[in-house]
Image 1 (cartoon, rainbow, N blue to C red):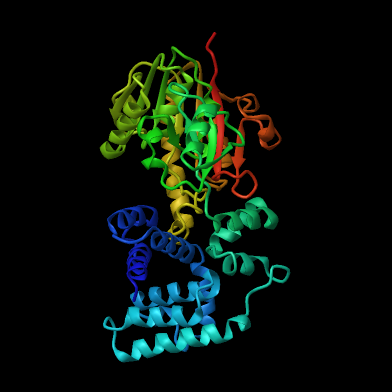
Image 2: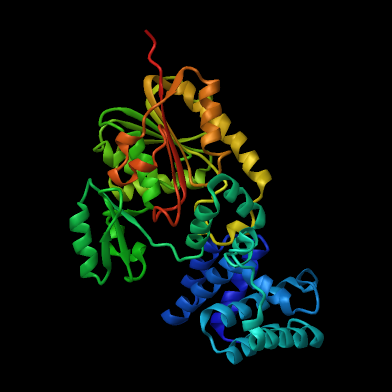
Length: 448
């Protein structure tokens, strides 16, 4: 078995076993591996692709397997999945994919498992045109679950909340490689100057769709390895997150709180929009994540943030004075970022959504108490779920008559105004070319 495939199998298996997410495991493994750049690209495509298409691959394997997949040893099953993904989606010669997969299980399992893996992959490669894929026009739920490779419960939820057509858009986008976006640091450069600098280093750079500071660099290598990144000229951040910050519309000289602030994208952008004037109170429950915020602020040249280790559901334990504005980018189910975290879709559940919604509720109430009269509260979650989005805000406004919904349209670019629903917007992969993100803007009613 080639070294590249060994690395891919190790990462893929650890991810499927819940050891960690691939977006954490993969960069670390590639940084340590003494292999060529093309092998690193192969590993990346194989791991992320097989994770995204795991549901489809399992369906294909089940169509020919003589035993339930649940009865196959997990490591052997993951080797089969990688082999099947190469056969079905990567254009790797069938013979090579079968041979390398068989080599992967030799020495790890007894002869019976090796023979089973060999026979199953050979049958798949010989009869792949006969796989009985569900048809969209006959059973859209089955099609989106199997062919677009998403958990059935998630497909059913999205279809009921969004429609079949929109769910299809989102699922297809989840199975594509996400495009990286960067935000020019306006304290040190401009979008135009940064674009020129990156293009001189070989990047193809497009303007972002929504935020004026946003750029979309392509085909240049590792963004964080560029001198421009190290000099703090930009931050790697999806445009959906930029829009959540812009929704707060912070003014220079004000006091703003950024809750759940790690790893620092929101705090640094707030500071730039405030022209490094005023005060940002950056709060996170994790010291590790708070340290990342501090590091990002140093790199970007920001001096106005103060860093507080604390629980966003218990802000009154360490905060006394009200603030002008609060951005709460709350922990959520992450259903809007499944393209960049392809294994996450298999780890989610409806129960987790409800548990997270209750946590978000506590954070909203805690934050609301600290917003001054006439101040602004923006809530955002990188997910696509009514319970964590519109229903969460509806419940909040019912509980808190001291807040009113504030029209979001004035903070959104013209292209997005048709999608604004009063004080909220739901960004969707496939429709908006961003991560999925729900954003709501509210104002505390002034006392007379």
